[in-house]
Each structure stands twice: as structure tokens, then as C-alpha cells.
Image (cartoon, rainbow, N blue to C red; front, side):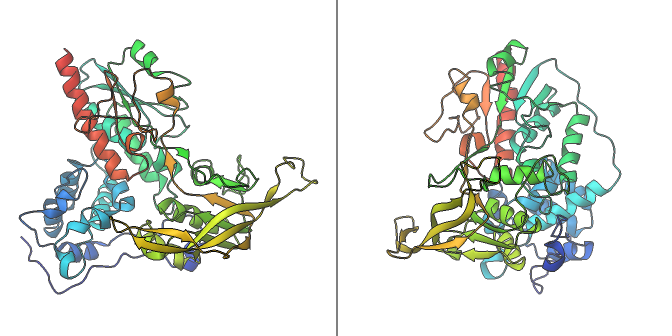
Length: 474
């Protein structure tokens, strides 16, 4: 066992320069070298109580996989991670480890926590770069399970159910598998080749994918049962965008972040001759402060925007996006308008443009300045409008990134499926079972927008519950 090194700090992640990366969609973070990974792994104390594991939604044996790295057994480290996580190359890039496993790291008490996410990415990338044995399907037990949605929850559930011997079919509404991993996260944060590799691995394991199939329109849940599926898992995510309800949101040049990112990531609107249009150039404001807002702002910059603003009604301290993403955005020239809230999107009519002159086009946004009130019982300070602080900014495009809700289509076409006031499907937290027999759910369709790893955890939980349900049913 390699010794613990208490004399080195957290190893920095190599990244491309802001000047270079702002002009393309290539990945920003370059990943650890073997030397950096060994140095970082040597910082792990190998705690017997393993507090980091309790911070992981899928309970990866973190000290065990880091110990393998210390010994130079990188493939062994991958196998440890793969016991719990089916998407390590994805999670190593996009999961907020700083709020989960790394937040529990003992090294973080007096210095910086071990870079668990970066080590996970290193191990997964090394594994994926090597030639390895082809995945072989497990013998089919004759029972069929339907998965709705091919995002992280659906992929995790599909992988586990296939390994249990079930025939699994994943139904995806869009033309490409991967859900939010494909349409929502930009290439420079998560290369789509990584998502494709994970999907291809599932296909090799016997999982079938049917794209362009909208459950609730193309087929209903009832029809899935009629087709012979004995259980259904709903992992359809939270793809319904939220808007503020202010004047001007119907103007041309106003996007939801979902639409803007889908046009860029999945429909390749950044190409010179795309089949789908997207706003390029001009002045852009992104309303919101989460990771999706950072993604939209950085995409807009790469599409040639003259100026990109993040408009957020609280201060930098309350900004919910990952610190790393905020730092990258600042480096790339994104301007943050903090303690600012929109009250109206301004527009003008262009009679020379026959597309939709009656609705007009974005010309700017009227905003007010905010101040934070006293902390409530949870310590959260609510923003309040500063009277007489109205001002206007000139814009060509506004992107709303203020959250999403579960799509109501499935619940509106499925009898006996209970939902909460926010549209999330109500489930048994221990099993993922819904109020409808044989129907399970997990991920953002239940909780609203959350993390990739928490969605995966819900998918794995439901897969185990489906296996138990079908065995008991027999």
C-alpha cells in the first residue's frame, strides 16, 4: 500500500486557454495525466469510516478505487467504480462532487479535499481508450421491461435490468439517445462520443433503443403493457422549461435554455449550414445562475456573441452553479450582472421581415437592481427590489435558464399515476414504485431538475425494485 502524502496540495486540472477555447466546442478540461493522478491519489487518507462514500448518491467505494490508483492498478480502479456507476466518464465530468463526496472528505477540513471526480474521470477515460473485451448479453429470462427516457436515470436502470437477464427496451422521444447528456450539456463539457460509447455498451449488452417515440403520444403506458412489457420505468426527466411570465417573452429572439442548448448540442445549429436556426452574434442575456445558465452563456459566446451577460437576482455567493463553471465563464469573458432582475423584455417590429413581424424582435431588457434581505430560518436571504433602480440594457437575444419541470404528457395520459403540485411523479422513496402497479419512476421526472448521479441512483434503485417485483409476481 502506497503511503499517504501530506505534503502536496490538490493537483490542478489542466485546461485549454480561454482565448483558444472560446472559439470552438472542443473540451475545456484536459484531464489528469498519470503523474497527476498518482500524486492526487496519494493525498487520500484511506479513512476507515469512509465519509466520502456517504456523500455519493450511488455509494461508490471511493477509498477502494483510489487505493487501486495508488498501486497503479487503473483497470482495477475502474472495476471498483463500475460496480456502482454505469457512467463514470460522464459523472467524472459533470457531477458536483464538491457538494457530494468531496464535501465529506476529511482532507477538506484543514486543506483541500481529494479530487475524487477528477480521479474518476482519469480512470474511466483510460479504460475507454483501451481495447477491451466486447460486452456480452446476459441470458434473457423471457420477461420484458420498458424504460421511458434515455437520460442518466433510464440508462442506469436499463444497464442493471439487462444484467439481471431482462429484455429491456428504451423509448426515447428525440432522434438521438442520451437524453439531457446529449441535448443539454455542451460538447466542451461532455463530448458526445463519451455518451455514444456508454449507449453502445448497453446495446452490446442486449438493450434495445427506440428513438423518435414519444410516450403519451406515439404510445401510451397502457399500450406498453398491452405489448407485453411487464413493468415500466419512467425516467423522462424534467424537460418542460420555466418562464418568468413577464412582458415580451413571446418576442423573436427569446429562447428557453432547453431550446437554445438542444439546437446547438443535438441539432448542430452551430454549423455553417444547419437545418435549424439559432441566434448568432449580437448581445445576449442569460437569465439565471445555475449550471444550465453557464452552459447557455458559454455556448452563446462560442457562437460569436458580441457580449454575453449572466443576469442573476442574488449575489455571487448565492450563485448555484459549480464554482469551476463560473470560473471558466469569467475567464471566457462572460459578464455577470448580479443583484439584477428582469421586469420586461423590450422589442420592436420589423415590417421588412415577413416571418413574424406582429410579435417583433428583442431590442433590450428592462431590469431592476436588488438587495438581499435578512436571512430566514434556513439562512437564505431573499432578494428585494430597490425602489427607483430601473434601467435598460440593449440586447438581441434573451435566454431563460430559470429551471425546468417534469413534462405533464405522461401523467396526463396515464390513469392512476399520482403527481405532486410541481408535476413530479410521486413514488415510494425506498423502491421508486408509483401509485400505478408495475410502473416505477426516478430521476428528474420525480424530483425536478437535479444531478446526473442522483438520477442514476434513482434508476439503479428502481431496477432492483423491478427485479424484486417481477420475481414476487411470479
